[in-house]
Amino acid sequence: MQERAVEPETDRPSSADGEDVDVVLADDHPVFRDGLAVLLDSMSGIRVVGRAGTGHEAIDLVRELHPDVVVMDVNMPDLDGIEATRRLTSESPHVGVVVLTMAEDDDTVFAAMRAGARGYLLKEAGPDDIVRSITAVARGEAVFGAAVARRIMDYFATGPPAAAGPGPFPELTPREREVLDLVAAGRANADIARTLFLSPKTVRNIVSNIFAKLHVSDRAEAIIRARDAGLGHG
Image (cartoon, rainbow, N blue to C red):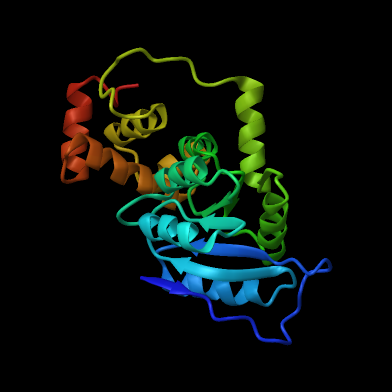
């Protein structure tokens, strides 16, 4: 569903220089999306001009409305936020993308950065952090939430994981193979989350991605395939 935001009321606060930051919101959860729209429209200097529930809708709205910033979720139907970001930044490089998501794993963070996102926040971020990120990205800056910034610093401090070679399941990312190894060892999602310092929701998303890539229907089938390939014995 596409919808254009209503025109701002005449008594709506404006930014100090009179120029509002036009924002398109892309999130497949209507309650969160509409609540965020109400919040942002109450802020001085920000105007929500469109709302999208899928990646394709976000791209269409950007073409129509020419916003300054797109606030993008990662997990959306029909076209995920990473691919939508990649297409948007390629087609409209002047538009800044702020990823606002529950996903905090390294693979998703760096995939978003490679796709061209200039901001990355977790949905637990406070309203002030979201507003600051939007206005900073509109100015051409790059902004990352505190938790994400720490992951980026750790990544560059320690370097990327050593290449594992072809190995089993080359279609999986290193993080997905790491999670699959723990699944094959009989570890529950909550235990995996604690071990890898991830949120339980992130682990659930990774496990779902593994099932889809391996074309398995459940955890038991994934464990069998993983153990046959030598995983889960460490």
